[in-house]
Image 1 (cartoon, rainbow, N blue to C red):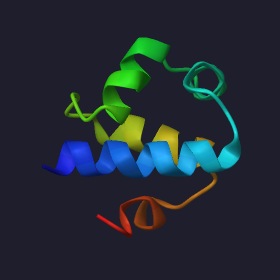
Image 2 (image 1 turned 135 degrees about the horizontal axis):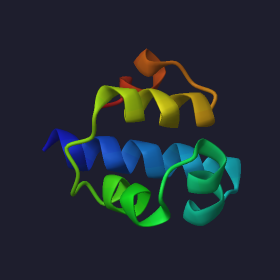
Image 3 (image 1 turned 135 degrees about the vertical axis):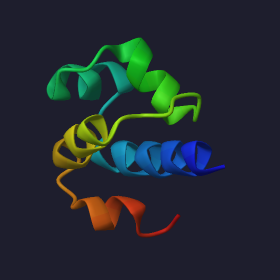
Image 4 (image 1 turned 180 degrees about the horizontal axis):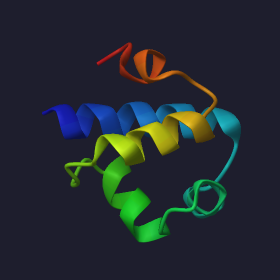
Amino acid sequence: MITEDLGKRIRELRRKTGMSQEKFALKIGMDRTYFASVEAGRRNIAICNIKKIADGLDVTLSELFEKL
């Protein structure tokens, strides 16, 4: 499912930054529990929040979706 694949991709990229979920969520102004549910693939996330995450990871939207 796309939400699970996106969550895995986000987790992979976040881990490369060395940040915890909590630190990353704080960096992008998102609640940690919401962000955790995105990474777990349990959220149908809005595009504006996907953009926030991509910006926080310093990747473009196309890079974020590259391996899905």
